[in-house]
Length: 467
Image (cartoon, rainbow, N blue to C red):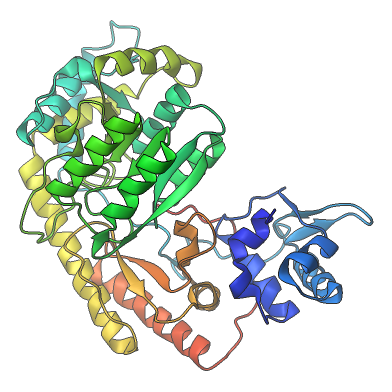
């Protein structure tokens, strides 16, 4: 059986690599979270057999990692993932000298302050209550339901649960419907922390490809029919990270197939409202089947600090979700809910602001890629990021070289289930143009380093959350 380390490395990427290069590849897996602190790695002998390399090469690889603090080794025992001691120099993503492209999110909407002020009387009126809000404030659930109805899916407030963000919603759904060992169909690439959540809940992940041009719907539906997975997790609108949007006809086909196979179809709509110039508006996935479970969020449209999301589902599932929810939280912060009520009444203004910001960010990324010369800007009609084809399997090398330039850029495999997608790099279009221009200049320098064969210094950094 292939070890998780080799699965993440990709045997083809490790073939012919020197011990120093292998150590660099494993270090990259640790830095961006594909290998977790404390995780046990294969023995030198087992890894040598898997990679068909000499044991001395594996010994040298682990020794290099140990000397840099990335593994801890017990003589005659196990080798486990570690992080360097605190007295090493750490690249601080909050430092102005570092630019963190692992976060694809904008600063707050200009209307957030005024919405917060307007929300205070609503919050004050709740002081006579217990303060716990397991399903969410009725007026907020009404507002979310109205939004779905406006988009073409008649919805009532009792089909909505308010959560502390979309990822919180995904975790609640998985905790409610999950059975360890079941299959889950996921897109490749996809949102890394959703993949982590599925792994943590014991699912066996089966990937289906997505590119900037969309989905292989035949592959996806055949996976559903053949494997009859318990769950399928999809991002149909401005897919993260490719920016693709699924057509209405494909949504209909996927939803019908999932219904026939008994698959819980989770549609993540976190990026749905991030339109720049798509030119058309699809129906929500839930319009094609009542069994679709939808999760959404205010974090990308308003502010990441507003931890406010929701679940839209059938009433029978809502009841099950409410029964499970108290086991790990007792509701969503009332202030955030009160603010969200105000913001949902201003969706046209919110959308216009987001469109302007994303358009400027997209232009800045495109200009930066032109300066690099070898890379091209893909079609990106909305969403959080551009999914860049590097033309060669060098994403991890480029990511390490970028760290040497004080640029945190998670490599393509961070968005996959098994160490693939080394040809790709996600670049956010959410930063202000001047910040993006500086990031792209650092990427150009890192690109030159990789092209010229320059070795980046060993990078030391904490685990990067990919947002």
